[in-house]
Image (cartoon, rainbow, N blue to C red; front, side, top):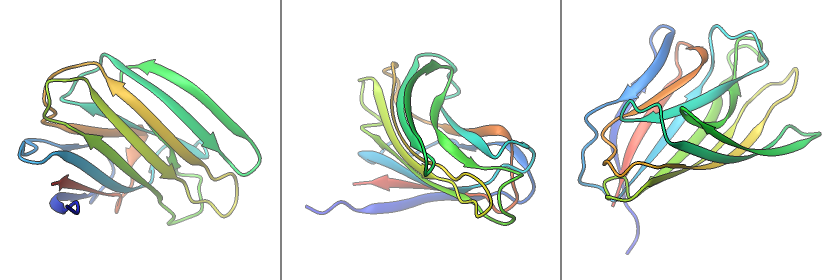
Length: 167
């Protein structure tokens, strides 16, 4: 049987905000996918971390990531208060460019620990651009009912997040 995607909600940032949250996520799907186009409006670094939290929790996250920028490749681990999904565009990136990402969360309603995988690319014609792969685990058995995205500063106007349910 082919997988089917059902659009649950799209959030488009109208003016800079420090976080974007999908709340009251329906529990009738098997998996979730979030597609995002993001830019940081206030962080002066070349790129900004895109971070994810489930159900408002700031505990029990662990990740592994692989990141390339055209000349070097690094990998590492995080055990922190959020999922690190990679580097997106920030204030100093080429004007009007946005990083793009996809986040996959299987079995989000199960009574098991929750995993997530992400791929993210930043866009920048002037300096270093990144590509990232990340996978992580939230060591919590609660069903996921909300997903919060943050960055190092504030999401820029026109940053867009779309949540899909998978059957």
